[in-house]
Each structure stands twice: as structure tokens, then as C-alpha cells.
Image 1 (tube, rainbow, N blue to C red):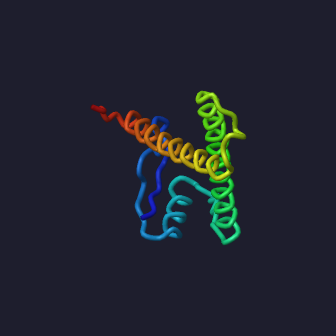
Image 2: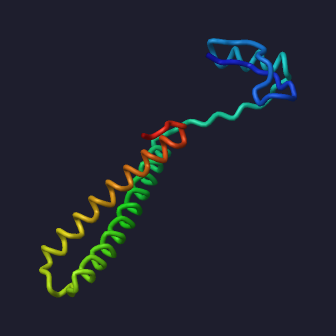
Length: 126
């Protein structure tokens, strides 16, 4: 459904002038009623979709790296609190501890994200 609006000075969309089932009919009516002369059309092509996918993958990589860095610093702090040194553990043990910290961080982020979303939507949390 294509709609033509005329700005009335008060609202963003303005007053509804007409509704149309096709874009061409809406553009003709807009040209006639409100002297509309320019329409900017953007089409998503394969290149744009590839760029969007690459951006998403890059963002995921950045967040995973940040989570990994936080997990490593938590692991170092946990080991220091035990009064030990990193060399006291094997590589596999350190990997397991870091992986556990990554899972904990991811879980915390998900929980906090849901709580923030609920707060933004105005839901009371009991």
C-alpha cells in the first residue's frame, strides 16, 4: 500500500491525501496534488547484502575478542586470588578456565541485556 501525505506544519507525516496499490499511481498523485518531483529509490543488491553480512561478522568478531580479553583478565585475577602463578597450571587447564569464564561472561551479558530490555519496555521485574 502506497500512501501520499501532505505536510500540514504540525506532524511529520501530515495529512493523508490518497492511498494507492502501486508506486507509479502514488507518484502521479503526488506530482499532481503536492507538486512532488523527486523520488529517491534505493535497491539492495547482492553487493550491499555482502557488505552487511561482512559488517555483522566483523562486529561479532570484535565482541568475541572483547569477551575473550575479559575472560583472560578474570582468569588471571582468579589465579592470583588462589595465591598461584599461571605457570602452575597446564595449558589445557588454563584453556578450560578461560572457556568457563567466557561462558559466564556471555551468560551475564545475556541476562543483563534482557533486564535492560525489560526495563526499557517498562516491565516490572519481581
